[in-house]
Amino acid sequence: MAPVLDELARQYAGKVKFVEINVDNNRSTASTYGIRGVPALFFFKGGRVVDSVAGALPKVEIERKLQTLVG
Figure 1: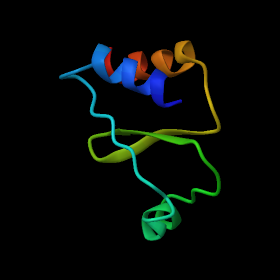
Figure 2 (figure 1 turned 30 degrees about the vertical axis):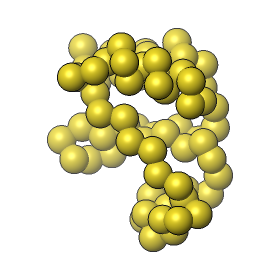
Figure 3 (figure 1 turned 60 degrees about the vertical axis):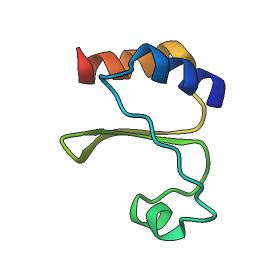
C-alpha cells in the first residue's frame, strides 16, 4: 500500500493530508479507532471519520473515495 499512498499523496498535495501510524507503537490510537488489522485506511473530513476501509484497496478505489471527499 505504501507506494500507492505515496503516489496519491503527491497527486493530492495541498488538498489531502496523508498520515501513517505504527499501530504497534500507538496502541491507544489503534484501540480508539477499532483497528484490528493492517492496513486500515481512515478518511477524515472536518476532524471526523467519514469513511474507513480494512485491508488493501486498489489505487482506483482509494481515488474514488478521495474524489467524493475532495471533489
